[in-house]
Image 1 (cartoon, rainbow, N blue to C red):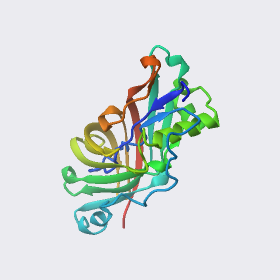
Image 2 (cartoon, rainbow, N blue to C red):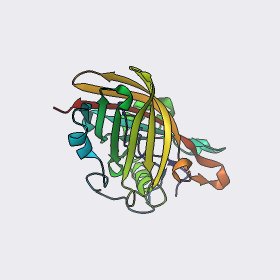
Image 3 (cartoon, rainbow, N blue to C red):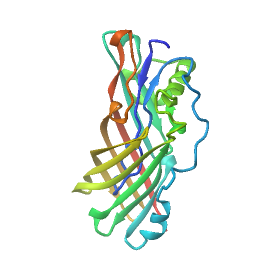
Image 4 (cartoon, one colour):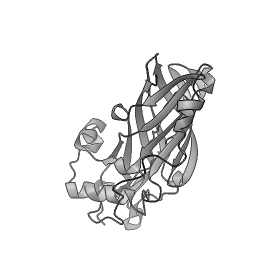
Length: 256
């Protein structure tokens, strides 16, 4: 394993209430190390949706309770930024993980406080250190990485010592509205990742009209909260910081 190593976390994306935060959308990607040889080959595919995902509730049961929106995967994303640490941090790299295949539904209730959302993100669709993403993340991510390093990072992130995407292929988030009023609200998230569910209260900016809904925000999660141990080397002189910075932008279109 090279000294360039890092970890990241993802979440279970089922958002409840109009703030599609994922986290999200968290968002997803947890522990990974920049190494040319993967610990375990990551899955090439995954089931179409998590077992028991409540699509029919939005398409049938919730009809008449408010406006139903369906997430547009091509226009939604979660960006996770993971940072190097330790006395020898200069030998490592910061990393950017992008999730652009967020899917799910949002109910904006006639009573706004009863709004909800459920989202999911297939972990095998996560993209690691795409040049455009690194450039957008700023100077701390300016280092150019080789294709082998990026492939190794992704393989280890999804592998058995990281997110274990073969066993836990999705990040899922369930969301409900905490407090506040449009456009500034707080969302209560139940994020499930790596077989662990954690709850967070996060800020969101909402823009809702008759046809579209957009939710945006930023928050922080930790890898260890989801049972992932951040990578360390050389007795802790080189390590991946436990905290992961998450930013998200979710666009959804109203279901006729």
